[in-house]
Image (cartoon, rainbow, N blue to C red; front, side, top):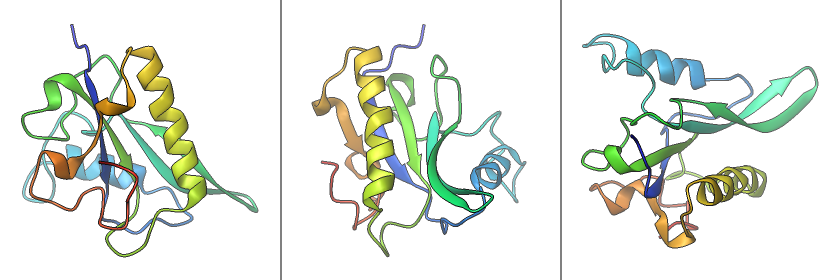
Amino acid sequence: MFSPKKVIVHHSLTKDGETVSWGAIRHYHTTLPPEGLGMTDIGYHAGIELVKSGDYLYYEILLGRMWNEVGAHTKGENHNSLGLCFVGNYDLIAPSESMLKIGASLVAFWLKLFKLGVEDVYGHNHFADKTCPGSMFSVIK
């Protein structure tokens, strides 16, 4: 049984906008190479993205893989971690306070649900030679 011991935070490196691109990320993850990665589902367990509904813009938590399934987001760590992707390129700009707040609410829920602590939250860069979740994303160790 999948029992996560940590949360790993990512950024998509794609532009966040007023239209949902979570579906495009899922499509890229599940499309066969060379156009995509050829996975069975999106690699992350959830994403945070700016969406537009009528005249309203707001950040929304979007479902990825089910939380009881092993993800495909961090080589060598998928068997014991949940992956959360903030849609945007946070090497270029800092994530907004609103985005961080909704992401923090999901992380806090996961920590409580899986009996983890804040010390169990990592940036993808902790496990890979990348800047992910972005050089402007300064709230993750």
